[in-house]
Structures are given as structure tokens and as C-alpha cells.
Length: 297
Image (tube, rainbow, N blue to C red):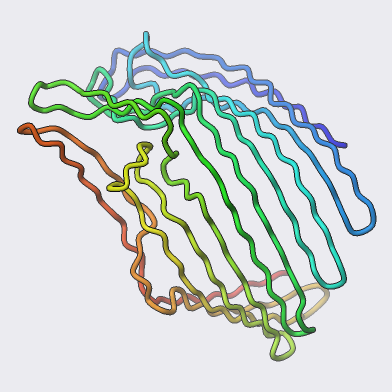
């Protein structure tokens, strides 16, 4: 068993913003963040369960609204349970988690009194999923490891605010159950390690990221497509002195020059009676390389 109890006392004072100098904020947050768990181990197996409660104060920019509509701190209840096993040269594990949020701060498109987009508290949201890991030594020089995460990341009753330039106001669209932005439901990776010579390790790295959304509406027209990228890496490490090591590496990223994006942003508006959505993406580099050196004394 284990337990970790933490108190956080955070004073927060803001004397105005550049765009809203009349706001004076004087807050004092006292957080109690307990964490405890229980573990059962026998031979090559381990079972565990843990619970953690966390609280976080809003960011400075979140207060740029009005003194009557100040943001609330975010609260999180995290439940995790899992199993780890080992048999001969193989290892595997399963971890299940449920993260329940209250007052999570997200962008909704709503503007404040100075017409700036700020984050807004949403009452209920959660992340729920399973993480599977495995590792196997196929040969004394060859091993393979990988992981797979399947998750469900949702917001309940999300209110989307859309600028209506025709009427100089905002329209509200209710989404009863939508995906949290930038939260793919499938993530997978695999690493193949090969030791051809002493002190030299060759790695083949694969990473898959499922589709994700640019905002919290689950709109298929505002998504980032899934992608699979492959990397190649060579490590060389040698020892010198007493406990000192010298390492060199060379890594070739995106070796097949996959064209993909991993980030971006979106916004929508109504003008001339038409509903328009603008999507902007950050393209990732095609095949590229990097090298480095490390010294441990």
C-alpha cells in the first residue's frame, strides 16, 4: 500500500490586464490532493489499484473576463487499476483508468467583455481507457516492445459559441456528448531493438496516432487525420573511467516522408447567412535527421 497527501496553498493576485485594466483579482486557493493505492505481488505477477484527487488553479489569462464571471479551479478524480506479468523473457501489462473532471477549462468560442476568446469551465468531462504494453526478447540480440492505448474522451453537454457577424452576436450550439479536442482514441507504438555488435544498438520505431479533433465538437470537418510514421535510430555507447560513459546517436525521422499534420486550430463564423469553418494545420517535416552526443561522468 502507499499514500501521498499533499496540500497546496496558492496566492493569486492580478492587478489588471493590458486589454482589461479594471480587473483586480485577489484569490487564495487551498487544495488538498490525496493519493493512495494498494498493490498485490506474487512471483511474476502484480495487481494494483490507485486513486488520486488533484486540483489546479486557473491560468492568468483565464481571469481576463469579469469579476462576476471568474473561472473556477479544475478538479480531477483519477481511478487506475491494472495487472503486470512476466514469463520467461516476456513481459506484459494492462492498465485501466477513469479520469473524471469537474470544471475543466476549455475553449468554447465564447468571448469575454473585451471580445477575447478565453477558456470556460465545463461541468462534466472524462477520460476513460485501457493501456496495453508488451515486451519480448526474441533473441539475445533482438527484442521487441510495444504499447496500445484505447480511450474514450468525452465532454457532456458542450456549448459551442459561434460568431454571428450578421447580427453582431454569438449563436450557441449544444453538443450533448462530444470528444475532447486533441485526444485520439487510438495510440500505438512499437520498437524493435537489435544489437549487431558490442556497444551498438539499432532501433526501428513506429508510431500510430488515430484521428483527433481541432475543437470539442466532434465535427468531422474539423479533424486531424490519423497517421503512421517510422523512425530509425543507431546508438553507440562506450565506458571510460569509473562509471563514466560516452554515447553517440544518429536518428532518421519519418523515413518514408509521410505527409501529415499533428496540430492546428479552427474557428467558425456566420457571415452573409453562410456558416463557414476555417481550419489551419501545422504540417510536419518530411524525412529529416538529427545526431547527438551524451557524456555521463
